[in-house]
Length: 251
Ligand code: PGA
Image (cartoon, rainbow, N blue to C red; front, top):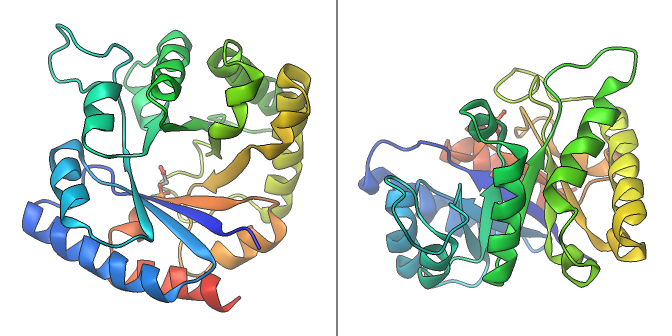
């Protein structure tokens, strides 16, 4: 059976390296007991390399939360795909809604996806609409985001991409999207990928993100037609993340 993928997006947490080490320790313990889950931890960039080299297990992979698209240069405050790769990190979150809100354009995201693939890492491409109403415009929006980010990716590399569908209205809220709505969106995303890149599009992993916690993770995995979850707040509170992973492991 394929394992569920859970990405722990720590965002700008915790406040100190000491706490980050302890959170990683707790995440490591729970990862070892959960056979059907693979965990990817995305810590703040300043902790990433050190946590990666501290970690000696096999169950957790590491991701950067963002990257520049160039390999080096005059970009104050940025880190490059080559630097991330050099830190033995295997994935990069690209186009998170919080980065898009800070001004990141589709053009940047397209270049970042290509640059991450070029370093043989996995881009975790975040997409999702800000508002949703009855007219179905969110499908048009999501399709445009997929085309903008992936149109230059050769079909052979498409299965290396992970799509994290995160409706912006659910991120940071107290309730996720309904699992049956996610099911429809997952079908739509797959159909769009197949239209763009052929049947390899069926092999792309699709995650859901936005207000996932220990109470709703299993339902989303069971009924949402997704391969995993991207978890923000509940991933930085060790007891909640433990309960979330244990719920998936027991389901
Ligand atoms: P949340 O964040 O789980 O805190 O809603 C999800 C995300 O933004 O990745």
